[in-house]
Image (cartoon, rainbow, N blue to C red; front, side, top):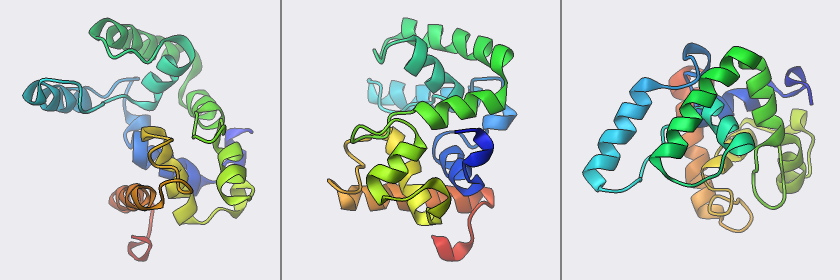
Amino acid sequence: RPLTAIPQRLRRAFLAAEDAAFYDHPGIDVGGILRALWVDLRAGAFVQGASTITQQVARTFLLTNERTLSRKLRETVLAFEIEAALGKPAILHRYLNQIYLGSGAYGVAAAARTYYGKPLDALTLAEAAMLAGLPKGPAHFNPVAHPEPARHRRDYVLHQMLEQGWAPPEAV
């Protein structure tokens, strides 16, 4: 689907959930990386991610999911290269159309049909937020198999949208 065919509320839900500063960084979010590094160092393990949407595109299409420093460094370099080669609209287009969202659904259109039996333009804000919560853990946040964790994640996404000014207070 062209990016313009994906409703703005759905695009904003994914940005709020995954990378609110997407249009403001060059492919990596240095502040987010430093915060995650601090949390990881304190925990003595990889417990918090800091991947931008561009880094997720690099990992999904060009790398593996291994959690190593060398893979993260390759992902960072690729993120800069992807940003330079494609630009923000093309990156977001690829991400939204090809990200795995659980239950065999790749991309937001497939996820809307799989979970709600609806086309993208018929999704409510809450349904859009539910889908946007899936990349963090498609199996764990599956709204059919695990409705309670999925609702909590949806509420987190709605709160993030409110923080960005992308959702009305009554939506949270």
